[in-house]
Length: 327
Image (cartoon, rainbow, N blue to C red; front, side, top):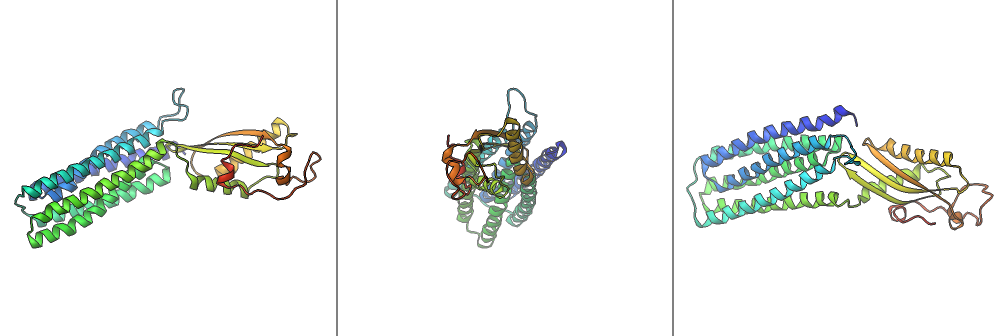
């Protein structure tokens, strides 16, 4: 990925932070104007948007630093850390909202100018959706988990805002004070669930949980571009650090192949995978010598060292490529 491409993530996040501050100011004004705890729900979530926006801005900026001796895999993991913090803050905001809603249920207050408040919340929700869409698309294009997580949060905020607006309209029409607290409790619960989903995804990344969908794609690429000298691929591992992938595998080659030719085969594996992914990829390929146990599945023609005749090829799947190599 070019340096300018990486900077795009930083520019996008700066814009998101700026608009998040403006949206927070608008929603806070709507709360003081109406005194509605339902609108307070939206305002508190916008507080989280602003805080996490600044955290994401810092993390993306930090992740752009080049690799060094202290961080040989780069600084990309900080994006997952910032997204985890975002998830925690969202859950806390949801809990605060539910607490305020329950308290207001037993101590109701008069709600004023709800029509103006509804209009402000609806416009802010629309802007959140646009920002979220822009953030997700940029994050997917430039492989930024922080932008994708932030965008999903913004869009989930919009979905909850739609429901909130519907509830506020009913409140405006019926004048039933208890509806204000009920709306806040409902959407506080939705906010907590959103935070939980973000936490689950980012924790998996921090724990280097295997991405089986991506591993499946890599196995397919290797199988479809297989060289007859590639007898087996095993011990396949994949890690993600920010916008970089790190792939390790064992490549089994004919035992009689010299070092120079074996190195070329490893380069060929690297090239075939890199052609299909626009992301920076670091490879560590360990070459193993074949053994007589693999002769039955080896399709090299006229091998004078073959101890068993060829029977069938074993298709490389995730299940058999993540196994340890046969020695």
